[in-house]
Length: 302
Image (tube, rainbow, N blue to C red):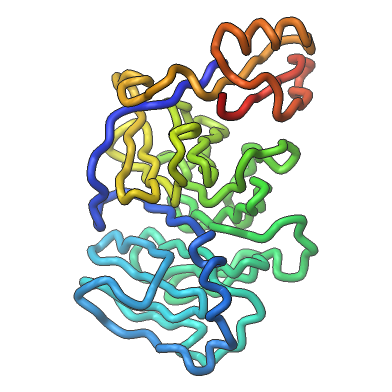
């Protein structure tokens, strides 16, 4: 398997019929302003962006934003369903993610310790609130039927609840930069993880089409549009770079291939040859593949 970088860029629309995963590092960066939520703003309506960092779209129209302190703001026709701030709950850790139910009549909030807060028709299926985590939770995604959800930690560890299947994780892989978000595939049979450097990790039936790793710009999340194969990586410059079938992987690249993966038997000489051919850095992580398929060595930016 070889991974390439690049594609074309399009302006990020605030509202698309897609799944937008905003980087929880923003929330963690704002955690210094987080107290107990006692004095935080409650659920309110707004016609413009305000009061939130993470967001989730309402399938019936509109969207919600939520702050690290757990204050939810509604936009458009998205209903006000409650929040930790409105209930005057004391949060031990900041909110870092949000996901909506398929009906648009509920949503989940997740804190960095994996605590789950469910509102409306969102059901509680479990949490990592009582589990010692190696790394904090940074995001979540719901299954297409709303019967479960995944939580993802900054090391790429995946925690699945309800009817959400486990397809794999990067928890045992050394990452160049932490994971900042995830998104399921439209059919729910896989998911994507996106790292802060724009690296994309695919599991289940999620296809890899490219990434922004090595571009020198941080990634804040990703968009998966059910109508189109592929995905878009949302970067700190306010743009979303589209990757998908039919898009040349190096359309907007500069300086050649920046990221690659070598899948074969464990062979230092083979990895060195691969690195020379692709002009990438040889080693970052080595893991043994299931089913006696040999070793996979992944590199980072070249």
